[in-house]
Image: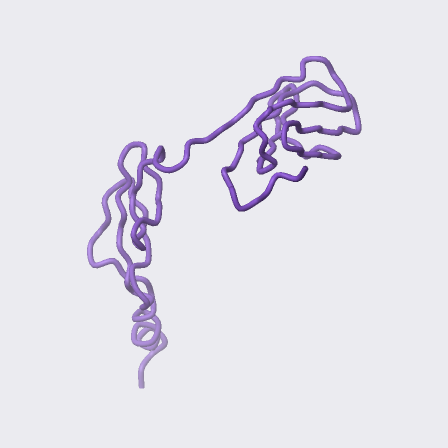
Length: 143
């Protein structure tokens, strides 16, 4: 009769992830197959991020693909309504709002139109807004 340690070794260890060799420093461990033990290291070089290319997770240059279109707006005087005119003819924007100390916060209201973003606040304050525009031609700009 086996003891609890032997039972653990025989039943549990085969189910645990396994790497046949240690991965290099500054790499990411990914699952490379259907089995629970098929792990591999992906080395990320300087300036790379983990990306899917030709169906394989690998290090890709962060600058590949569509470039980022961003607008920064500074609201110097405290106000309860901030209007950012960006003239991008694009409503596909990620809006990040920061107070005058640099802390991100959720505004009370947010209206995004083709060329402006209006941010509504409960209390007057100063701060800044960073808009990041996402190219998404399948999303039409409302008229």
